[in-house]
Image 1 (tube, one colour):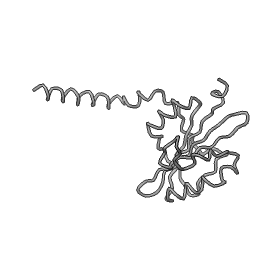
Image 2 (tube, helix red, strand yellow):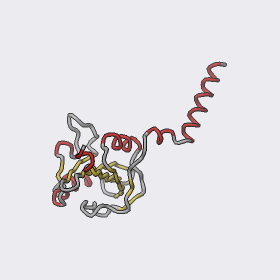
Image 3 (cartoon, helix red, strand yellow):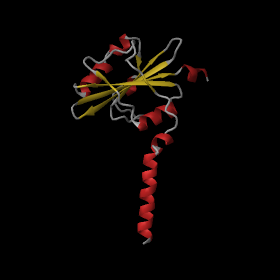
Image 4 (tube, helix red, strand yellow):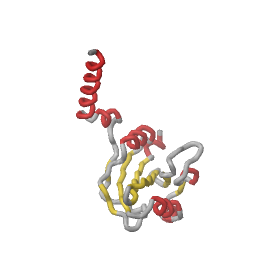
Length: 158
């Protein structure tokens, strides 16, 4: 009898948590802004189309907590393979657009970071200190590309 009451209480608590989007609220304020178009200084992957997919909750929590700067993102989808997207962005296309690649982590795991080889980081200096993270994820019929941009200017001043 007590076991069934405990299970019922747990199910009820889970239902309330899901209905209130508790997981989203525990993630803190979602300060990420989905932009309407890819930034002009970021080369688009040829043939990719914009989607309205938000960043996965774990990534929003990590980026929101670790990167205190302003966050914006956009998501695209392509029929090309994950490796084709990685090859495009790990070459010189981003450096040609004024970005500096952080070589140790470009679409590969390092001793410090395990990403499954799905992320590449770039920085850009000047009056604004910016970082962009490009993440790729294989889907059943193609690849999703997540572009996440951080304005680190305020963080640099602290």
